Length: 57
Image 1 (cartoon, rainbow, N blue to C red):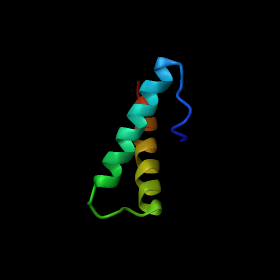
Image 2 (cartoon, one colour):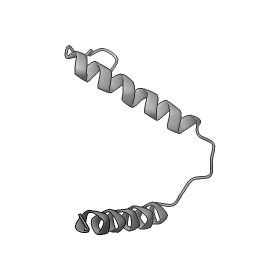
Image 3 (spheres, rainbow, N blue to C red):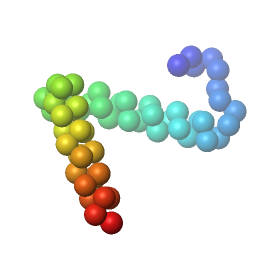
Image 4 (cartoon, one colour):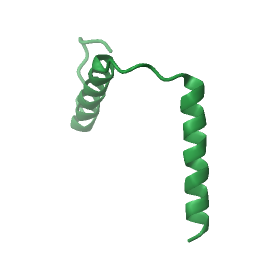
């Protein structure tokens, strides 16, 4: 993002700051990386679990 342009909307500024903080935190995380395929498998498993949970209600 260009430093020359500043958002005028306070919500956009807050969102930008939160995003920058999240990126900095992720870059500082030295845990071993997880493959895209593993993340996908885990997310699909969680989606199915939530589908089953909500179907019971």
